[in-house]
Length: 183
Image (cartoon, rainbow, N blue to C red; front, side):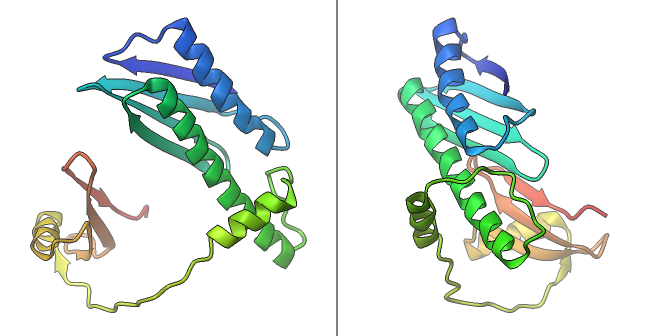
C-alpha cells in the first residue's frame, strides 16, 4: 500500500505518520495480495476535534471511512475498525455470490469461520417497510425545499431538465448534495 497522508490545520509528524501507516497496514491481512492502490488519509483539526478520513480505492471496491474524536490516535483506531467492518461485510457478500456462481473468484483471502458467522449474523438485512410514490418533475432547488418541508434527510425526484431520477440529500456539514446517474 502506498500512503498519501496530508493534514489540515495540523502538521503531520513522523510519529503520526508511522502510527497511521502501521494501523492501516494491518488491513492487508484481509487481501490475497497487497492492493496496489494508494491509501488517501486526510487528518484535520477543528475546534479541538480531530478528524481522520481514509479512502482506499480498488478495482471492485471503494473503502472509505471517517471518524471524529478528541484524540487523533483513538480516531485512527476507530477508523481502522470501521474499515475492517466494511471489508468483512463485503467479503460476506462476495462469498455468498461465490457459492451461487462458482466461476466468480473473490478478491479477499479467507477469514476464520467464526468471523464470517459473526458478520453474517450482524448483517441480516430486513426490509420492514416499502413506500411507493410518484416522481414529480422539478429542479434540484425545489427538491431541497420539499425535503426540508418534509423534514427528511434525502429526497428522490425526477429532474425536469434531463428527465433522470436524482436524489438530493443533507450533508453532515449542513449543506446539500445531489446524486445524478452517469449517462
